[in-house]
Image (tube, rainbow, N blue to C red; front, side, top):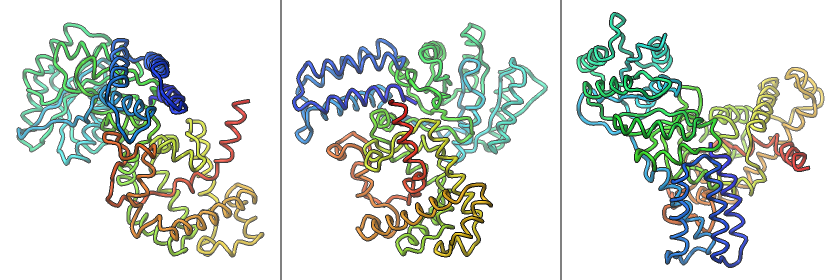
Length: 502
């Protein structure tokens, strides 16, 4: 998401940094480029205009940070304004002590309400120890209630069903009573939608709201529809009073205009974004982290949270100890590749790392095609290791020419690819040994000092409000060796980039 806007903003701000002394003309030219980038990203015209006016006012005012260069001051102002535009602070779902808390899911037909209802139920159960009950009151769309039933089963959540009635109000009242009697603390109501906003739909939603007194009314919007989603959210808020927004299909929206406009237009925050079809592909919306990604500062915190939730930490710690002792085998290497695969696509992982860090290790940002190519390379690597015996995986030094030919035949590759893998593996062991001896790795996990170097622009790492890792002093979970795992395709990617330029 935001790829188009991100590329343009980073290019504009990079040009600013190239200036020794910033003049009013430099700033005005940069702001014109930023305004154009926002409009091309389908940001609401008034929102873009107000954004530029606010940045200009602060850039020309007296707000000066002594530790920053003039160009960095502009970057800082743009960052702060982006965070404010996206909603300021992250907004969590608000629950009370009443049982159950009712959450209404509303929106137009086709926006992804039913799938989002299942995703939220799973997220609440996993991350907030809630006990949700789902109910569908979409009695108009064929098989809508059956769809929610399938999703509930897939996500391991409970659903309330009453096939003998087709009255939405009767359904919600019975579901509410059932939740109270059986101890469910959250009732998620998947409401009906229409292809357009009409009186009948709104009257029904108002009646459900009056009958259930929801603590949250979440509007589900398809991010791909851009300003249409913003206008719909504005109308729903005017008629029934939404408390937050869920943006679906954010992984397919390169512009991000809806996310950048919706808070300013409706006054209600984006609370979740859907970033894929899987039921765990729902993320809380963090304005500061999104602003960091847009400006190329990465999002190390989100990467760490992803690692904590999907990577076996005890196994990662054990692998780190083996690396430090030079006991890291090809078995461990294969385990590490499998850990990396759990984190998702390479393009997704790379977007969470600062551009400066990637530039330092010679790794470009990846598009989806390049990401898939690297994932295929990983599969071939894993296949080669799978074709080795236990003894060969434990000691790569016994891999003579005959063994390598046998491994190539067994994995459907060639000897050159087997040789390449062994070379990468030995180089990685050597590199990790050097890092250990230099003191970069501590006894358990990556140290905060190292992570601060990954946080973005070095002169801006400690800047208040910049996000990144700041003064993140505590020890962080061991990250799988992304650099080593991605090594197979670096040269290929560079060649591809050169071909595209010519």
